Length: 261
Image 1 (spheres, one colour):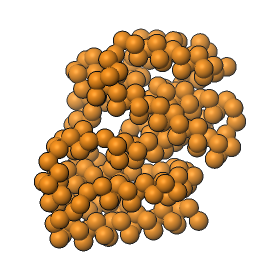
Image 2 (cartoon, helix red, strand yellow; image 1 turned 60 degrees about the vertical axis):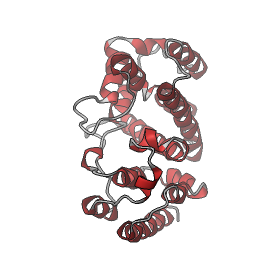
Image 3 (cartoon, helix red, strand yellow; image 1 turned 135 degrees about the vertical axis):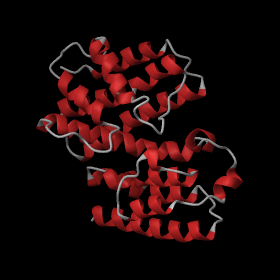
Image 4 (cartoon, helix red, strand yellow; image 1 turned 90 degrees about the vertical axis):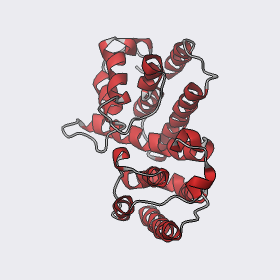
């Protein structure tokens, strides 16, 4: 049995060891609850049963626990371009299952493999092979829900947090690298480590749409116009960039329209 109310109380208790007023920790707290909200929406759209709905909410609650542990280890909560330096999904699985923290949130161990695989795969470029049907379902759910709330994050957080600089004029005049542009136009995910400029990274965020597993998730983006809002947050000045953004925007909107038919 999954007691989601008990799990949420345990999560609030867990957060007491952190300064939730600090910018970095507050960002991840808000994101966690945003992913939980996204999980509730998608579960309803997919008509998931009570068990899978609560399991999806629990995984959403715990998916970024490695971020909080990361903040204790190196005072950071962000990805590095070199993923081998720190992988918050691997670290989260370590503290949850090797250190048995998981039992704070759920007493029954019957879902451990599903929770482990979902968290482990939530930030990978692709889901690993060999998962069971239930493991694969929840890996897909958390990947979609994480991306959905990340679109909200991109519209609410500062450029300093998102792109490493608060020089708006410099961002406006940036270029998109040809390789990044071509990857986007192939409807492919963009690896963080391949980005060279702030606009490359911004393009990588929007390219999340090409890795959604459920059309219902894309429909949420469409209904809330989140992709266009992300494109519009920057006032592009470079002529080459303006042309690329127009092409990327048209491709993205056509892609979502097709998926939502």
